[in-house]
Image 1 (cartoon, one colour):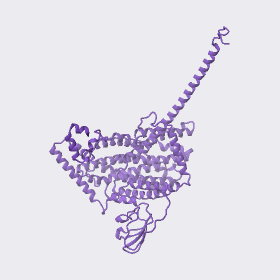
Image 2: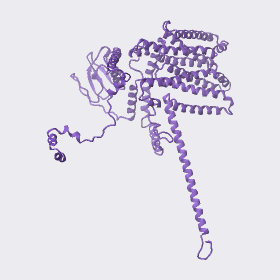
Image 3: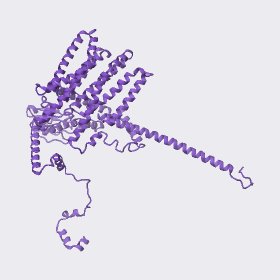
Image 4: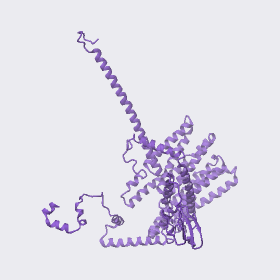
Length: 626
């Protein structure tokens, strides 16, 4: 300040005149305090209008006005579907907070009730009636009644003559309690099924999506034509399977022992063939076909079922009991039909049934999750041996981790960075939505071609004939291979559906990649079955199958990166291999360095001995020190 006063006394008078908060920022450094300055609102708006920035100013303003109109219309459509007076996000949050709370309710009349909570408080609240009536143990205790939100302090009391009860002494919180609550809230926040999952259940998902986006009739017709092409290809594949699968020859064999069951299967195959042909006609001539999407989807679904049924017919004799074949056929048909109803959504009846099946399945899974929480809390008790053993394993890992390099050897430093994120997703960052969609479509086409090739190999490779040969000497092993083939067949069909209808398929990249990966493993398995008798010992064939499957799976996880769990496992296997190679390298280096050190010591000893033997002795005049 003295220097400023000397240079400019007027500035000092000005600074003293104003408050110090008006000029104190002048003492800060001029360097940047943050890495970047970003206005997210402006960036979001610029990204929204980036495709229209090249227009003239008046055209640009008019285009933005139209975009705002469409956005407001789509939001109005979404808002019109709201049921009730509470937002779904608020209902979900209240559900998550109200889980696991144990409240006991004692009604004293139509206007009041006593409620005892987990914190030992006993208070009276106004009773509700109608659809918001409070029931003990219900998840909806806190919805529609803000006074019932759980608190950690005593709630306000009503002037009804009640008194506050002294809190009950409880045990301290354990690790199991925190683990259970975190897992429970994690499942509640995963939002696997949206709140409006069963809203407008009779309306197809892709139809609602196009309506929400406000697409024109031309865009809707184009989207339907793309789906019809997928239906057509699947129907034609099913019709081709009628002659490739040898289903008629299998039925001829069954007719000798089970004529009634054979007749029923013939009728079913006839109905499937008719529906597939109807689907081909509906998908080929959509402009004049009534209910074109329904008939085409029905034919495609029957083509999927036909592939499953013909495979089970071909392997009917390989099951340990005939009933096992029927059970496998029913279960696999239900699984494929459920995924088809969720993914393809045609016909509408199958879509509605699949939605209800998925909904009730998740309800059952939630009950199983509650039971697992109880088991976790029991396993986490100090008296159990699981907890100390877990701590020991973690301690051993931490101890050995210090001897390993920070980054995986022979690999990039960021090889395990964001291991749960695929590399092609990282590469798509910064690209436009059209470029990302095009890249995903290209990958889905590759997955689709691999899945179709795997389904073709099932009949070309003669896998059933190979299993017949193995069944003569190893019936149990043949049955295990049949079950594996059924599993591969289901996953390949699911992959075909996910890759054909990606817009409505849940986890489209994961399911499509899973089907393609199983197609690769199926090819490896059929080759080993074909060369089963050429190995010196049968166990050699099994070892070769396991090793080759692991190698193909590792490369698939690194290259294709779908599904996610194969990608993560492949990365960790590669890291483990590199760490093992690094350990062998260090061990070899230690051995070689030890051998070199020992060799140097031997050489030094020999040289010293040689020097002592051949050194001149000047005392006696001799030339040697002897």
